[in-house]
Length: 344
Image (cartoon, rainbow, N blue to C red):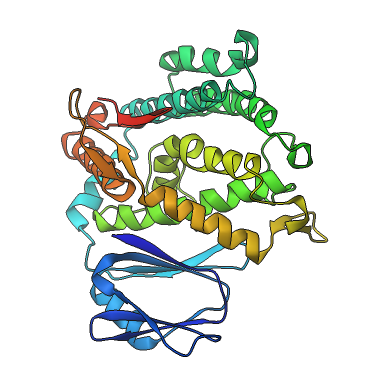
């Protein structure tokens, strides 16, 4: 299964005999893709989808996400067939359980900080970090268990993030992409523009996975519920930010696959990559998400799964935690250079 990303406005999609037809203005013949092989469709800009295709996607529980040219997520079309009210009732009930929220939040942020440290340590061929450089991360990691509220967990996460992004800037080989800290609303430099775009793609992917499992994407345990925010997707994305998105952007820049001239800044100070660079970066993320990853649910299980299967298994562990009211059953994604796995 895979996601279909449409980044060119001249593309139109239809449906015929169980397949998606893809037509481009400069090509007379249409390409076809089996609908059964598609897990979701992401539309950037003004690509066109036929009504018949949209109906078939809804019937097959294939969600369609819509984005602006710059990568802002607008919304989606999806089916209600996967809604599980009993499961969602238990999910929502536990959002008011302070003990459950705290324990699960600790596990999520513990994994996020470990993955951030693993990424920085995997790049020692570019910059050899000293203990003092990483102190903000290690201090937060070592003190997470002393947090007695979700707010304290988020405080440690914020301290770790400030240290992490300060370190991350030292791993860029091209000084033109230098940045000072994380900024997102709007992104004010090319590096932040690219990671915001990557997070948006991954966030959308996770929303689809959450809905496939009958959970409600707007009720979460680490992030607070607020209007228009799929908070559970924000919970689940945390462990993937460093190894999937940040590393991809670092490699993209350091390999010289993007030039500073491919970015523009509007009057509000927002910086965005152009369509050509966006397409190349989308292709890179598609490749990363399709590649097999080492993942196991218990020690000794070293079966290799693709990202989507791995994400499904991780959400299964969250459902298990919810069903048994036991946050220790949740298995966060822990990354290490050269292999990936989930911890018990």
